Image 1: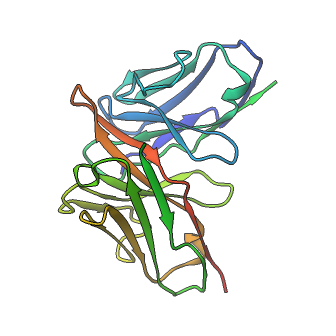
Image 2: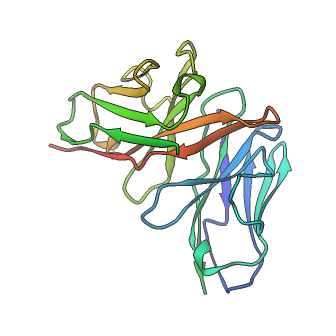
Length: 108
Length: 123
C-alpha cells in the first residue's frame, strides 16, 4: 500500500504568516491528492482536490501544488479561523485511499 | 442542500455486531459513489470503505476487511455499514462521505460529510 507522510505534525504561526504543509506519497499518485481541514469539534471539510483545484467556497488564500509523490498545501496569509488540523488523502485508482497523519496548525 | 445523516452508533461489547445507516437527501443519490471514514478519539482520519454508484465496486481497508460490509439502497437513498466481530479499536466516530464528478470531468472525493455517529466498543 502507498504510505502518506505529512510534515510537520504541528506548527505555530502568526496572523498573516505564510504556512506550508507537506504531504509525501511512497509511490506516484499523479494528481490524485486532496486536502481536508478539520476545525476543533467539527466535521472535516474538503479544501482542495486534484492536488491544486480549490473546492467551491474555499478562500483563495488556500492553494495546493505538486504531483507524483510531493504535494504542498499553502495558506498565503494565516487567519485565526484557519486554526485546524489539515489532512492530505490519496484517491488514485488503487485503494486504500489513505489519509496522512494530519498537521495541527495553531496561532502563535 | 446536500444532507447526509448517519445513525446507529451506540455502546457495544467486543465481538458484537452493529449496522450503521446514512440517510441522504438533497441530491440524486444513485449517481454518486460513497465512503465510510472513521476517526478514533483524539486520532486522525481513517478511510475504511468505498462503494460505487451501482454498488458493483466495493473496497475495504485491511483493518476492517472480512468484518465490515458496505451496501446501499438507491431507491431509499441510504448507505449502510454492517459491522461484525467488533473490537475495542473500532471505537470511533463513523462518517459517511459523498464523492462526485465536477463539470470538467475531475473526480472529487468526499465533498460532503455527515455529522458522524459514535460507536463505542467496550466491555
